Length: 191
Image (cartoon, rainbow, N blue to C red; front, side, top):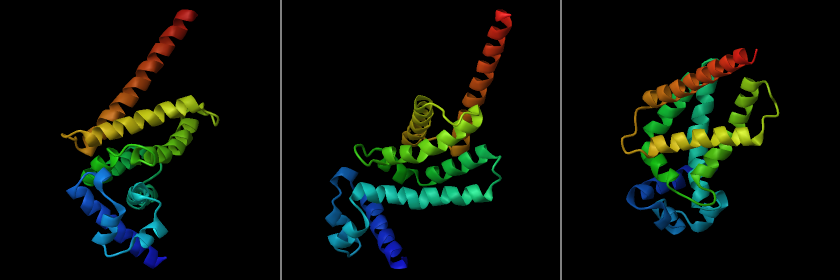
């Protein structure tokens, strides 16, 4: 297993270097392999294609980081967890900006959506006391969060993560409070 990870990390480093030099769609598997003195067979033993390699980078770096932070922080401090995750994305924003511009099947956007969907499903079930939240609801929130993250990271004047999270928190909490007030007002009028 250790040798496998060494090979994968070498391929990932080669892809990262190439992404600094040229657009992703111009990068060929042969160039990745040449950069780290490996053959194409080694690449295809570990990855289906270069998109799979980008997703592996996300999985090994971001997801493992998120798990470590989740184990470190108290579970009731979700905003702190979100801010730490955003700090990680922000610190490596040069890579994520380029990776998020990749479109099509197996893109990082699709992969990130697959990662977020079950997390949001669990959180909505907790918030609404509804284990069977509709797929429409889960898709709505997943799309909103994914779009916000992408827009934030792709912005040339990408605001610091603490500011981004503060704005998201303000929107969510302010919106929820306004809906609550409106519903209470409507309920009192119905009486």
